[in-house]
Amino acid sequence: MSDPDSPRALSDQGKAAYQRGDFLAAADHFTAAAAAYLQVGDPLMAAEMHNNASVAHLQTGDAETALALAGGTPEIFAAAGDVRRQAMAVGNRAAALEGLKRVEEALEAYELSADLFKQAGDSDLRLQALQARSALLLNSGRQLQALAAMKSGLDDLKKPTPRQRFLRRLLDIPFSMWKK
Image 1: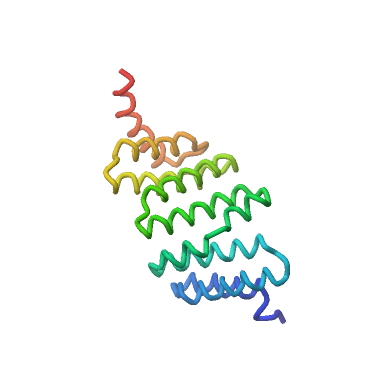
Image 2: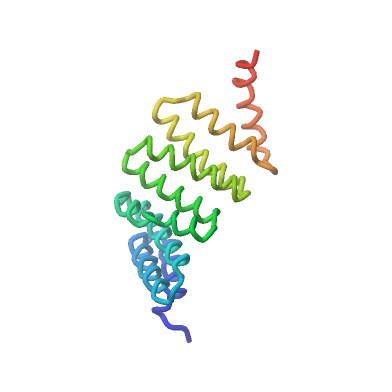
């Protein structure tokens, strides 16, 4: 029988709470798991748990706590050379900044997240970061920049879905007009 206070058990409880929509309980479990992982000397898993707690707090609308939890996690992953998790952590920070209406900082963070995903070779997650950036640009009245961000993400996909291919062709229209 496993210890219910083990880092893995706490993480599993957090995931289960998140799946059933109990985001506050999920955040509490993830935060406890982070502390437990630190106790056993695993700072990378602790940082991942802080990011999970950050996402759970975002789901409750608490962007301030989400930002605090995402805090220094990108730097932890960067120091370990884990570019993919660094990109995720920067994306979580961007979402929290967006929730706090700190638009310019959020745009920069989404762009950095997309760049890091590109370095990690993850075009699908890069597209997600660029979609979030594009939506934020669109909501702040910068339609052309939003289209360019979306097109950039779609152009990098190695195996686009039929919907993504259609969207890519659709976005090619305004850009082809500027080339003439």
